Length: 146
Image (tube, rainbow, N blue to C red; front, side, top):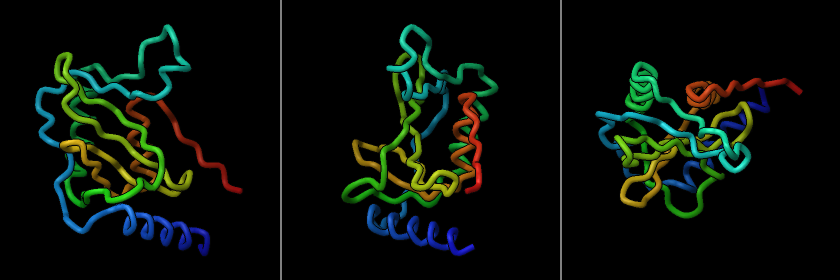
């Protein structure tokens, strides 16, 4: 229990240091999204297609997942609390939005991140939410206790 309190304290401290105080509404309209591409392991997957969500029903589920997280966004100020992993949301061949995450502690959560006008926006995310994000791309998360 003490370990988890420490993780929550660290997450709260990072959010306070990395974010401004203005509340935002997260990603722009996601109507008409035709593909969601995780731009991560492409350099290790040479010759293979990128990890992507392409079926219309799966895209609708992903957009619903993002839409359910419209509240609680704040502008990032200063250095990000970690390295983001983005998915690009495409409408046809155009990238219309980027939505991703920063994991602070494996199995301890982190932040969702999006960009608007070149500015990063952060929102707290639980470990369960991060695992659900990765599951859209066929990536499973397993937490093995110490």
